Length: 334
Length: 237
Picture: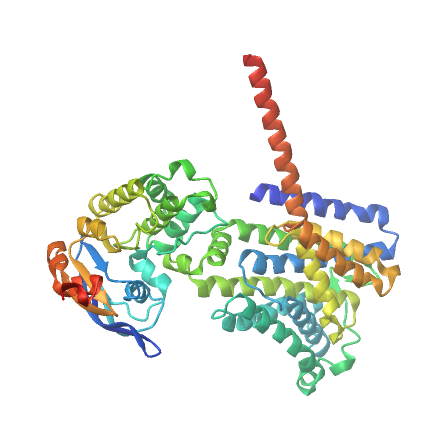
């Protein structure tokens, strides 16, 4: 997909989400859902960038999200850093940790990277709950209860001011999505794909695997951490429950539904998944069962997610059009 | 131009390359022959920095031992692979541009990459995805991308393997032209002796990682040790 169609799909999707508050602004439930669609679409996009494009099976994206949240919460609660600055510092901290996690992954092949990064996520919970976490201000198993909201131009963007927070999130979402498109379509993006397809050949053509793999770890953890931070100032409370398997699974569903390595399919996947997940709330414990079943169906029927479906449809129409033109040509020549 | 001094690579107890020394001169087509498992491809992997090794390799008088692969590429040594390596997510043009952008020491010059696409006759396929190419096309693409790095030495690894007689003729012409028209030093590993003796001079023959002999095509094809290693010792008894 070229940069123009990527930008068009993103503009239409986010534009549509952006005007919805005009109609749904009165409903706090709808505003919460819309806000979460934006946050998850960016977090899932980062996962797609590192896994679908760079081919690095990082299963630590939820951990990076939580690190961003904790960093910003601790900075603003314990060190009184203004939240608007703390969220960007949290992105920076997450990026540094992302690069450190990326270092051992340079020497490892696909499935082993998944193991290392997932082990990192598993280790994060006992760390935050234990004495080491408490020492840095994680609040142990109780978590952090009163995270201050972001203040922007004298306006407080908290969960009681849903519409301003939504638009603030939308702006950050648009900026981050533009950055992702620019990266994918720059020579960085082609370097990621080349390293994914054949690291040996790419290296022998002068591509530094070291540089570009750490770069992708750094960028994706920065954005993921930033959005984790944004989320924590929005909800105001934080505990290790954010590291739950459910968050991981729902994120994975977004990518699978959208199509792995089919950006911006993952954004459509996020819209779909968050909406379905909310609609299924009344189903209680059956919700996750249905979501799980959905993944099986999507993987079996649509290996490239909705993007694959759209491509098939446009290819079909193209082929039909071409065959019609050739028939017409044939008829006119006869 | 390229000088290997007593290089040794051991995988556990097995010495894949054993105390090997040789020198490639500017503008030569330097052939490397030897039976399967003789250590030919390992030798390429050592020169291009995929593995660490004992001994020393000098390129243009500079010690390149221990440098990472991408730095060696930028210094001017490029290569192809025995099993075709392509970037299936990219088009032909994008793949060649990888070499041009990342591998050349100067500023990225799309014009030169375009010339290399034309030089390897890939003009027709330039906007196609690389997995649509046939075997010869994939081999040409590897060469085009390697040439786009503007190398001083091109190392090709069994370029004729899997090709039919017509294609072998074409590939032989391409390698000759790289050497004569682009004035690039070529190192070639090839099993197909007829092609190797036609193209290369001198030829280094190795077995079990050791040099058996180095010489002109006539010298090596008449060397009793070379005949023994290809046809077996019992040949003349």
